[in-house]
Structure formats: structure tokens, C-alpha cells
Image 1 (cartoon, rainbow, N blue to C red):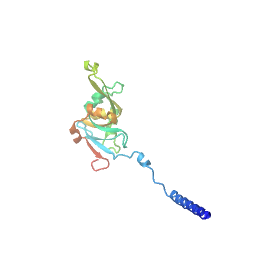
Image 2: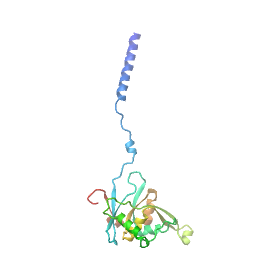
Image 3: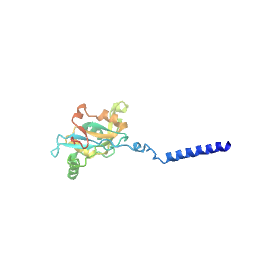
Image 4: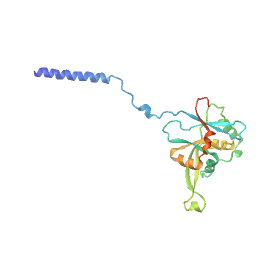
Length: 204
């Protein structure tokens, strides 16, 4: 009797072992490593019209950061407001007006931004902060003014302004996007002028 029960126990253990072995030989399900890597966004191109430019009448710009989860946003800005804030930057990296640039620099930027180029330039990448405004109200902390610094794209931003662009997109960290819209945001009708279209469509 005891031998029979022992044989049954051994048989049950062998059955469980075979089942485990067969399961372990199956391919394991994929982990979520593919979702952990940030998927690429559908790339978008912004078409910015130029009102005072004899060589071409628009430029194309794309994002700096093109993957999800980058924590950056695109903000459509008023060019004059943006450059007014940029002129307050005290880091000694405020460019002179385009009229004072070397002719080679002007030609280089013009060719770089040419919409006929297969390579689409990136939009300017900026950061924005505030400081006390000059005057009595600023002294008492009652009035502040915006200060924009370019991480990249100051030459193209100032060239576009000189070429008659009223609005264009810039990229900024998400924590500064609200402040940038408040101080430099474009008018509501700017979106009907500056068109955003997916890349590789008939609109681009």
C-alpha cells in the first residue's frame, strides 16, 4: 500500500516537471521595453510666410525634439514680442541687426532656410524667464518683464524677422510654455497664416 502511494507521488511529480519543462521551452512574451522607448511623433512641418523677402516667400521649420515624452512644446510666437524679450538678455549673446551682418553670414542663413532644400531647418529653441522691470514698480517688485535666451536658432529668428515674418513657431520646455505664451504668444489668427502640416503629404 505504501509503495503504491509512493509510486503515485513520484508519478505526479514527474507530470508536474514535464508540464513545467514544456512551458519553459515556449517563447517568453515580449516585455514592455518597446513601449519604454519613446515612440517617434508624426513629424510636422510649419510653413512661415515672409512678406519682405525677394528670394522666396516662405520657409519651412520642424521641431527640435521629435519624440514623445521630451517635455517640450511648440509655441507660436509674435516675432516682435519675442525679440523684444531676447534683446534684454544680458549674456552678451544678443546679435546685431541683420543689416550689420557680414554678407557671407546673410547668404549662408538665406541658403540654409531656402524651402527648396531637402533638409528642413529646425525652429528656434528658446528659454524664458522674468526679472524686475525698470522703474519704480519694478523696484518694488510689482512689475516684471520677460527675458528670452536662445538655446539655438537666434540667427534664423532674426533673419526671419528681417524678412517680414510676423509669427513663427519656437520650441520651449513645457514648464516655460505658459509664460512664453503669456508674454510672446501670437494672435489667434496666426494659426491661419502659419500652417502646420504632417511631413510627406501633399501640403509639404
